[in-house]
Image (cartoon, rainbow, N blue to C red; front, side, top):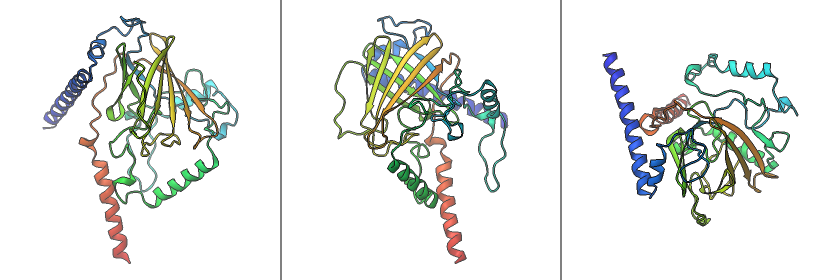
Length: 329
């Protein structure tokens, strides 16, 4: 019976992945991107596409143990020592017992957190030079108030849970490394770039034809992106985020993200991103990471809603807790 279940699960996963790939292909054709589909067949080792642009196609990992901002405990230290980096890389492979009263999470085998950046930097943020987010005092106060509210109201309804918990979308543009599924798959044509984000399988379709961005009245979960080539660097500007967008850094509907993608060699993509939001930060800030190619990696459909028992369990547990508390009064 167990063998039957395993075989059935494998077949379902294969069918989901095949269906997802077919749906993505059909969707791209509907959008008028036949070259995008054809572009998947190109050799990823080609430095340039058949039409002459730098070839960024392939699957790339942004998993990293280098934090977005430098831990305050490191002060002004810009780099880890080789010994510190090695210890961080090894530490994530060890299982850690959950705290008392917690059912815990996955064991270390299931995580894919990456490793410390090869240049040993202590933060992805390169500007400001202190490696810290230049948040306004009111931003810090607002974040503290939000955390306090969440602690008191963890699950009054599904609206109290994150966009990620609710299977709506991942954490904005650009995403920051989390425990798993930290990959981009890039497709190209002369007029479009499409970026498939593995986590919750978001697809960003980015026009390169110079069309204007959407008006500010139209807001989207992952914003509205427009791209252009500056030499061999792809520049993508994204604005018009929704008021419900949740980045893994402080943001607002007025956040503007400017990303730069540059191929360093056949197996490395440099990804630089600058965030500007005068309502949240005292100045723009910039981060940078090197993303290695994952030549053998297969992205399966992130079938979030189909397997999202966590949302039901979170809400039902909260209601049970409330009922027990009421009965004790």
